[in-house]
Picture 1 (cartoon, rainbow, N blue to C red):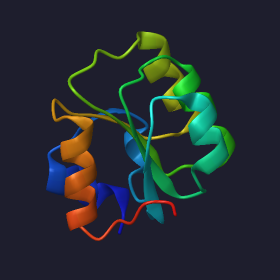
Picture 2: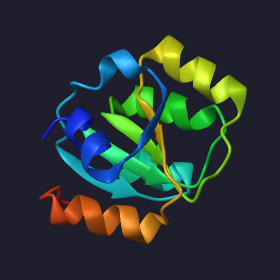
Picture 3: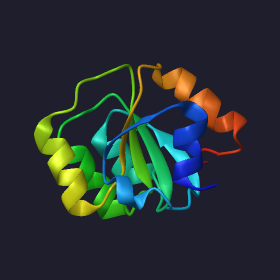
Length: 114
């Protein structure tokens, strides 16, 4: 499934790197601890988090993640948006809770990391 389809299905707002929404999603990972994401997420995963600082983009870029979904209406740091555009990492936002987003991704057939 492409990231663009997830944006449409979940009604996500695109905050950064809107030109990179055709990335294929290989699975998903949810965590707010950067160290856990670095240890467990895999290339192509979409990452669901409450974090909004620029380091989330650095981690996503390092791991070649398909994109980041920031949940619960958390305000994004302007530097995070700028970094997402620079690194071409799609940055998406939603007022939905992390649990709800993960549930909806699973319903779309996106599997988590084992």
